[in-house]
Length: 197
Image (cartoon, rainbow, N blue to C red; front, side, top):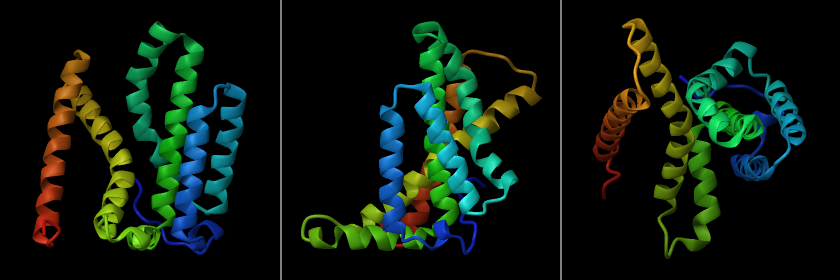
């Protein structure tokens, strides 16, 4: 599965979760604002270096990016038609980098560390917000980005195995149904553990 914690003793693994979340937010925001392929290329090198520092095996790192390529297989041609090849390349690089960085975070940070980091960050605001729920929501959001890409990949593979071709709607409907079913199961699991109180 994408983004499952991969134990290690690297500098990235040992860095505090709150620091990693801050760096993740800064880099993803910067990547989203970059309008040059050259700068996005430099950001790509940085992401590769971070994976290397974290000592994440190449096969595991590659599995983090492959599912988003299925999404890009549909999104890039549409972007080329409406915005040109440069806009499509910028969009594709930004998305791949964001997913790779989110995957690196989840590979090097246990969910419990993310929850603890959010509780520490929100502790001064406990009067107005529930730090536990926000920490859980953040952990789920980081995990669900690559999970959604994985759902798209599975639907595409199932369609290919059946020899089915079709419109974007024929892809979107099963993906949405599976995503809603997954969300329902997740909600039931959270309710069973007392998170609906």
